[in-house]
Image (cartoon, rainbow, N blue to C red; front, side):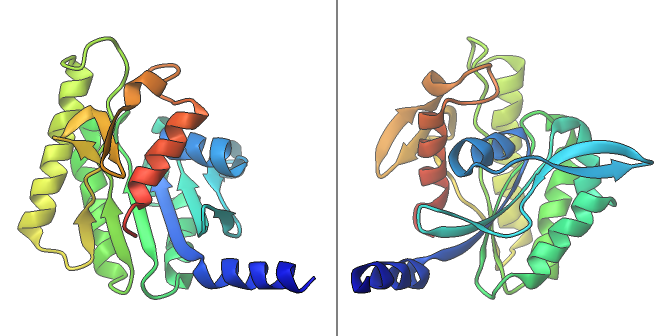
Length: 220
């Protein structure tokens, strides 16, 4: 009994607060790794689905809140709507020093400016939180130099450059890629061809998401 109690206390003491904000891949990661289900929100009486944890879930020593949208509902996160309001509720309640991982855009490359403005406004509004933009991983369409993958490379490059130019103190570009190659990630100094773990071009098998998560949180 004492050993169990000590283990619980150790887990509590070492857990870290983390908020994950993203699109389809963050949705699927939270479902595959953390057993998070969909929630409903309503637009003019019509139910729409998104991932929104009502309370944090525990995974790999982290206490995690998740907000994940699909590509057709992104505008409800970027401006006004229940997802937008719920995200701000999470950030307002977050403890000082909480890490916020943000990974949006691989299905909405044409909305780069809107997505970046969201990142910047959140960092400005919540200066006591630490925001990390995670570069987009490519899609497995058989051609790393395809139009989509080239767009992903440009998206990542523009985010990194603009974060540096604007000079945020609490918004960082957390590069998990090997030489900015969106087909490879780095985990514990090991280069991984992450597209080998892809399922339907967009998502990943569980072992792929395990590696992506480890890359995202490494050093936090």
